[in-house]
Length: 223
Ligand SMILES: NC(=O)c1ccc[n+]([C@@H]2O[C@H](COP(=O)([O-])OP(=O)(O)OC[C@H]3O[C@@H](n4cnc5c(N)ncnc54)[C@H](OP(=O)(O)O)[C@@H]3O)[C@@H](O)[C@H]2O)c1
Image (tube, rainbow, N blue to C red):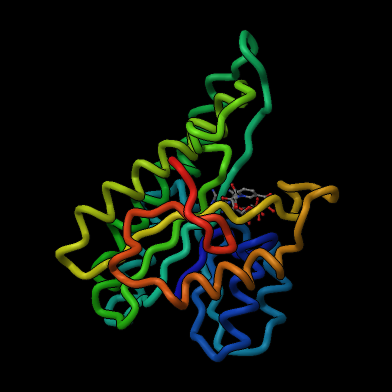
């Protein structure tokens, strides 16, 4: 399995959890020096330097791993961007957030789909957010992050349709409000609670779930 943004937060917790269960984990981080805690983990963990916005590096990692099945691709790397309100939008920052949160997950799947197809589970998990749910938006604002995750949700649905014939299941999750650098200390749950629950849902996913948006505890969410 392969996780992006694996050096801290929810991504690191996924690596720790799958490695503890004996999985071979490809842990991708844009700054390998910052991934000390990943390298310190026991188990079959391989660290790769990967900035998910670098298309050449994504393609070269897919070539490097050719021949190896990737059972689960977790597109976890994410950016919050500035939380500016109406009239204050930083358009350059918005483009940067879209590159990480929306464009990169699709590019990862486009480059890795051959390896995913070779595997048994054939699963893509996109880490989205309830902030990307149009149905849940009752307070406005947060144009940058909200739009990046709403677009990721749309990418998830189209991928699910496009890859159904190839046996690949694609879902997205809201991981909960999680105590990470992004979620902050006051968040509701720990990375271990979030990932523990998501792993139980992931274990039970079948092709029938493809194209769905789940809360971390398995509750279906509205787009
Ligand atoms: N925490 C929450 O409450 C919450 C709620 C809803 C959704 N989410 C989503 O959950 C995911 C993980 O969030 P988190 O809370 O663990 O955030 P985090 O602690 O801020 O970690 C973000 C991770 O993404 C990586 N990243 C950012 N840009 C990257 C790039 N260009 N290439 C490769 N990696 C990159 C970061 O790497 P660096 O260390 O190099 O910066 C870091 O490893 C994100 O997609 C986020 O939107 C989180």
